[in-house]
Length: 343
Ligand SMILES: Cc1ncc(COP(=O)(O)O)c(C=O)c1O
Image (cartoon, rainbow, N blue to C red; front, side, top):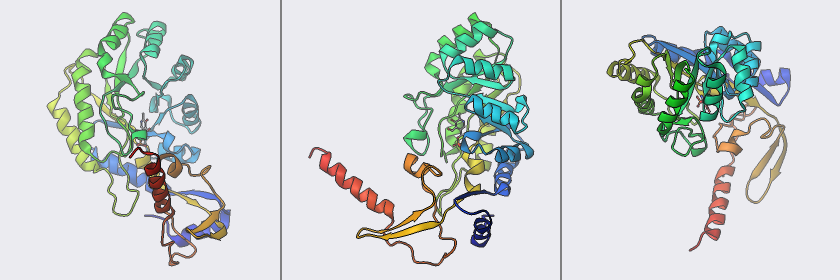
C-alpha cells in the first residue's frame, strides 16, 4: 500500500526535507510476488542492489530471504557488511580490472565473468579450484530504452555468444569449473517471451558445460511508472519459464537452478523523495517551483528520461501547472532539431 499524503507530511515534518522515505512492506510484497509465482520452480533471487544500496534496505532484503547481486567490489563489501553470507552474494561486473575479480574470489562470493580476457586470467590462476559463471551476451534486443538494453549485438555487456569456441577453448585449456551461465538483456522488460528467448540461447550452449548447476536470466522486470502502466506479468513469466524447461531437459542430466536478479522490481515502488518548495517563479512560459533537492538526489529523469510521479502532498487538490515542463522542453528540442536537420 502506498504511503498516504498525511503519513508523508508527518514524516517530513519530523525529519525535515529533502528526505528519502522507503516502505519496507512494499519490497516484501514485490518479493512475495516472485516467490509465490515461482513456488514450483527451483529458483534463487538475487536483488540487483545497484537499484538502491542503502544498507538498511539491504538488511531488509536479507531478512526476507532474498540474496543479493552486486556490480562492483564495494557493493560486495557492503552486502557482507549488511550481513549476507558469501554464498548468497553474486558479483556480476563489467569491464573491471582482474584484481577486483580476484578480491571477490578471496571473499568467497559467486562470480560471473564477462570478458574473454578475465576468463582466461581466472582460468590460468585458479584452474578448476573455484567455480565461476560466465556472462553471455545473447544478441537479443530488449528493454525500455537503448541506454538500458544490455543484451543486443552491439552491447559491451557479456561475452558474445558468437565467441562460444573461444570460451570453450579457454575453459578446456585451463580445466575451468563453470557452474553458471548468465545473461541480462535489459531493464523495463514487460514481455515474458524475452526471457524465454534467453533460455533458448542458453540451452543451445548448455551441453558444452558439464558442471553447470544454474542458469541466471538476470533482471529487468518492468514496473509501472505512470498510472495505467502494467508490470511484467510474473505468474505468466513463471509459467513460460517452466514450459521452456519442460521443453529443454538439461542434456547433462542434473537439474538446473534458475537465478534471477531483479533490481527495480523490488524497490522502485517503495521509495519517496520528499522536497519542499523554496521559491515560485512565474515566467511567460510556465511557473517554476524551486525546491530543496535536485538531480544530485534524483538523477534518473535527466539521465534516462525516466518518469517519476510528482505529487503536491501538502496541498493535493491544488491546480496543476497547465503545461507540463516536459512538454515545453519537447517542443523546444523539436524546434532545435528541425533547425539543424537538412531539409
Ligand atoms: C547484470 C544485471 N542484473 C540485474 C540488473 C537489474 O535490472 P532491473 O533493475 O531492471 O531489474 C541489471 C541492471 O542494470 C544488471 O545490469
